[in-house]
Length: 487
Ligand SMILES: [Zn+2]
Ligand SMILES: [Zn+2]
Image (tube, rainbow, N blue to C red; front, side, top):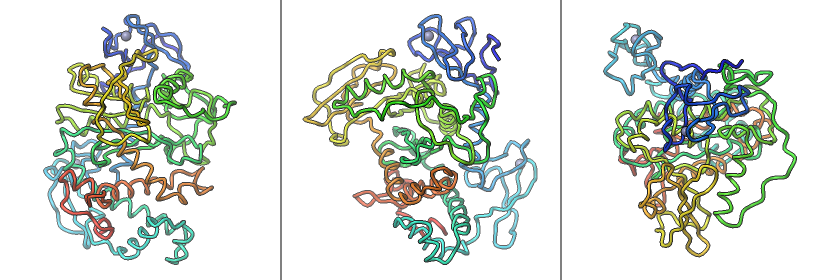
């Protein structure tokens, strides 16, 4: 329903405004600065009277809702006060000791009392793991690449029991990670971050994207989310952006007629082809508003990717209030650009946020320096790209508010390689599980695996020099063994 007004703010959150940093209207949400022309969720709804940009509209309440969903998924099982009116609500004991008293035991498990509302609760993960041996074997087999039915046969369990164990292992992993994540947020203040976006199951075409954000240099993964909610239902039709359920995607897509896009020979052609793909979307922030083939999951609900991406950066903003500067390396994708610009608008105005697009080909060597640099203004956005080349190796960066004079530095340092490597390793390690025909339409079963993989990547997996990402960042002293991860 069109109201001629911007979607309402949600607890002070208003994400609808001009996203051109050089424009006078950047960050301003007063309706007089814009023309509102349409309320179809697949079409742009806002036109800036100053610069002519057309940022798509978002439902702020739906971003908040997605934010809560992600937060619950990431930390829902950690011991914390569960009184929803209490100031300690949802703040885990692991990272907010000051809010709680230890309050005896329940069996072998630690009990706590909230200092504010006096409610008591038990930390389910504070006892020794009684299933350590079995779960360690299970993980060992899983990481060796055995299919689920083979693991079940060897360990004499049925698939239901297998997935129950996986849930429990994931919960222990999240618990282990919570305190290391807290150290990361304290100690890695000056380190650049990177985000990457890929499909969760590359061969499934089920519409589930996987967004990961973490340390760009050592590959410590801090946040990862998918735009799929196993607990919600698919709506029958598109809801306009004024309705809170606009974040849920119905099974209605523009049909794809052509074959897959052809490979590009040079990096410049690749970057230009990407801009063309983006402009074929009716909503530049929504990858599903162009002709595309999707086999909708048979259970649960796809979330419009902009809601998951904005919510993840909202999570990031909540975690790093004490960071003076934020540097974020991104693949060339306007969804991520808009999300970063919207969520970190204040830091952008004071130039304390550096979002940088990075693209490179396979021949590029990490940390190689750029000798010759070509500057080019590309696309409708007039994005200022710097390209460099060494033989067949090519790399390009685009500082999104056009900082000039530091192209060599960004060309050398900016990289999304570690995060891409992380996601590629997941796909290789768990190929049989990820590609299982039944699993392609039921992606929810991969959620615990994502938590386990993040813990393994951050705490157990050693690089060529023998260091885990957590060690390289001085967060832990030694690599964790699987037994330590599960103990
Ligand atoms: Zn503008
Ligand atoms: Zn409380």
